Each structure stands twice: as structure tokens, then as C-alpha cells.
Image (cartoon, rainbow, N blue to C red; front, side, top):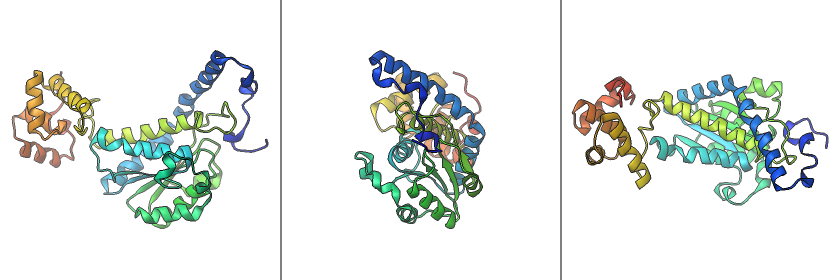
Length: 300
């Protein structure tokens, strides 16, 4: 099985995995998984560059658009889907595009990844423009759909990045604004990139969007103050944040959150400064939504 891609190499440590008992298999997989975080850490500067590109896109009215196939595409769609409830973003702000469309989220459509033309068409369909940052995800580095999408995104003037888990070719590095390549090594099961490569991908995407949201002021201290109160769990979290940061009892925090329209950030400003919802919103808008610039640091 000769192949230059790390994702297609055989792992010498797992060549006899079929002879192990259940505990032995679990221990082997766990040992391999421990390598993932370190490999991601080696790419810290590239990941930080991707964060900067995402923030630049957001502040310029653009979007972060993930594009991938198979597991890579699913992880991009997952990360994008988690932004609105966690940080109160518009669903269009972070988009996930998967080869084969949303049906491919629940049923594999592996052949969809082979068409660069389909990838290019997907960029036109979502209206990619110069303000956007498009991050292609292809752990093998070779997925035609992703390359076609990124080529078209660059034609449209967007910044582009590439996330892969094998050694990037020099021409790939030269072509894109950032290339992130955590080298997690061969998979326990040869070519099964939903494993270590998939874990690395999720770590990278989580880091990019979390860091970008922090930079945009959607986090106060380490609290997600832009969350949407869309269920009882999030309502409880919002009320607990207000209790802790403003020293309120639960009924008072619940009332304040209600008067703030379920928006924790607005409620914090209202409670700290004694202003109404409209005035709190105005003051936040003046400083780009950064709570600390309005009320400073609140001690619990």
C-alpha cells in the first residue's frame, strides 16, 4: 500500500489489532489519540492566522465558510451549526458546505467528493464574495471537490485556507492564505480518517471559531454572554451568569433576563449600570458589543 499521504500509511503499532481483545483495542486507540492534541499544538501559529482571517471576515461583513466531503464536511457543518445557540450569531455567519448536500450528513455519498466542478458550483450557490474566508477541509489533502471550491473562492476574491493531516505540497502552501497541517500520523485502521484526523479537525475548528468569538466580544471573562436563551438549559445558564456576576438572587436574575429579552450581555449592562434595555443595547453597540468596555471587569 504505497502512498505518500500520511492518512493512507499503515500504522505499524496497530498491524495486529485484529488479534487483541476488547480492552487491548481500547488501549491501543487511546494511546494513538493522545498524539492528536500535540500535533494540533504544533500548528498553533497557522491556527492563529486562521482566527485572524475569520475575525477580519466577520468585521468586514463577511463569513467563515467551511467546505469538505465525508467526515471533513460533516465536522464543518457541525461546527457551523453550533455557533448560533452558543454565541448568538446569525446562522449565515459561519456556513458549512458538504459534498453531496445535507443528505450526506446522515448517509455517506462518497462519490460526491470527486467533482471539482461541483465544489466550484457550491461557492456560487452560497454567494461567496471577497469579504469571506473559505476554509477547505480535506484530511488527505487531495479531495477534488474541496480544491475546486477553493479555486472558485479565490477567483471570487475570498481569502482561502486549507486544513489537512498530511504533509502539504509547496504549491498548496503558496496558493492559500493559510495552511493548517496537524500531522497525527497513520490511523489505527488504515485510511479511517474519521479517527485521529477527524479528532484533530474538530479540535482545530473548535479553536478557530471559539477564538474568533472571543475576539469579537461574545465572551465576557470566560462566560458565553451572547448565548441564545432557546431552551431551559440555556435559560438556567443565563440566570446563573447574572446571579454570579451581579450578586443577584435567582428570581431577580430571571426577571432581569426577561426584561433584557433573553440576552445575557444586555442584562449584564442593565444590571450593572441601572439602565433600561434600549440604553444598554445602545452602549454595547458603541463599543462593538464588548461588555468589558461598558462595565469593566465584574467581580463575582
